[in-house]
Length: 427
Image (cartoon, rainbow, N blue to C red; front, side):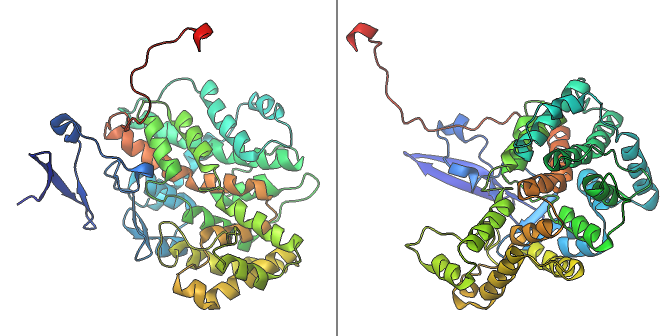
């Protein structure tokens, strides 16, 4: 027998069905609440509100579990590459070799970006934040691909997905090279997807590109770990913009803007800015650990703990190993990275942090790796967007194929009651 939830209010009783997910999550279906009772719920930040039913990502913050389409993040990070994970998220299953090869070949066929896009890029000063540049360039793709996606056509949907997976890395690389004052690069079709991204970003015009296996592997893992994270701020933005039947590129551009915020994708940039501030103040990690524990001190230790994971961030466990490998391989002498390692060591051993489970999260380690790879701090969130791209696509595709209604939250009005207009000379 199906379970129901009962609401008693003002002498009336209302019943609502209870939905059970495949991982035994329970949700009260209140879509008829307002029409039957005239009441709405209020849930600032939607922390207790499910906006959709989704088959893409399962997250259990209390147990530290993250799965894409049923596969554990640990196994995917160890055994799959980013392109396989992108295919899995978007289409629901891991590709066989023929599907993967075809997918990659189709992406390579669409990897050219219209030359006129360079004019748009040229319009930005070098001081422009890369996330603003990337959001604008992604939105500008609409002008060069003006037809909307026919979601009823599997072929049209596939072509649109392949097109953005091909062009987005080029825009990311161009954004970095603009920041560094380097000539723009179109990449190399003979390389793998992530290896090509690495080349487009880092190849010097006067030097031969040399493959750095450890750096590419770390980048591949970081992209996998960031590929999707359930209904977070930017993903919800992509879905709600797409629910108006806005196109894929426009929806993604909105997601990039949402990711930009320091409470979301900008967290790894905030980590490095914190480390730089500690260095400028003498680099005393013990002093700042004490400040972090002082409730009266406004200082906050960035990159520790997570608003969803109440235990260790499973992604942090994976990427910590890559961070150690990258730092060991490159042999970098950098006081900022020394401070990071000092904070990590103290936090993992300090009773205050261990008791509260304030462990280093994925933003802490990703910031360290990106800095070690020579990526400017302002580009960190751009790299996050690159990783999150397949998740956004998957969520947009799922939402459109299911025909979800346009997003339209309600509110509780707390403003003035009806007032009479007063002429300006009488105010």
